[in-house]
Length: 337
Image (cartoon, rainbow, N blue to C red):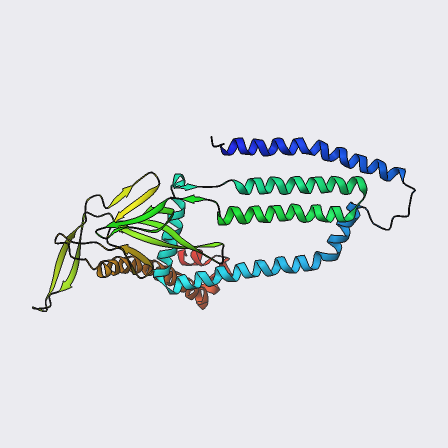
């Protein structure tokens, strides 16, 4: 019989409350034995004084570290924004990736609660050592309490963020050459270009970050591709029909019909076959869809840039600036006048 998460958590809490009185009793015995010993001059400060000394001694390195982390995060965000402005295809990929995480089916990601147990054990050890430090006036115990509390918080946060013990549904490609597992489910979304996007991962980078990618599956019943006839050298439009039941959703797996995966740009596409069983080249169709999205994003960006430049030009106009100063009006007010 497998215990649920609630039952396990209750068991951990029960153990903590069972061991805490015993630990406090042991500390009380230590305190009484220490009181019976001859009094000696204390060369060690109290734990609370040690806190103040620790803060006063390390406030500058902690402040510098915090500022450095804040600046690095700002620089990383700025670089990401500049890259997206320069590459509209990357902007579309990051936006689709965020939508997949937003619309993820949580039932396909079984989150492990082991990080809660690690946090509970860390808090318990920290509280226990802090009680010992207060009773015995022992500064090393206080330092260990501080380290164990912070360590439990950091370790539990890493386990929560990385999801080491989570169970993810698998994503398979099924075709004439058998079934192949291509990744593990992280999220999904349907975009206006007519695709269903699956965010997957298959390995980790630096033992923490998941190497994720997006598989785009066409939901339209048919699509048209403009090609050039090799004999007549004239352009012609070919129509391809999407196979029925292209996506099969099982209890623990998502099966996509295809002969494998191919990559075009930032996305992966299933390799499909036409009515005659021939492989269909999705590159032109994928490029056409990505081009339409990129052109729309570029139009939005150019419109924003145009409005900003026009507003700056109006603000630099001497006549408008004179009216604004004499009448006390803004640019919009000056225009209206």
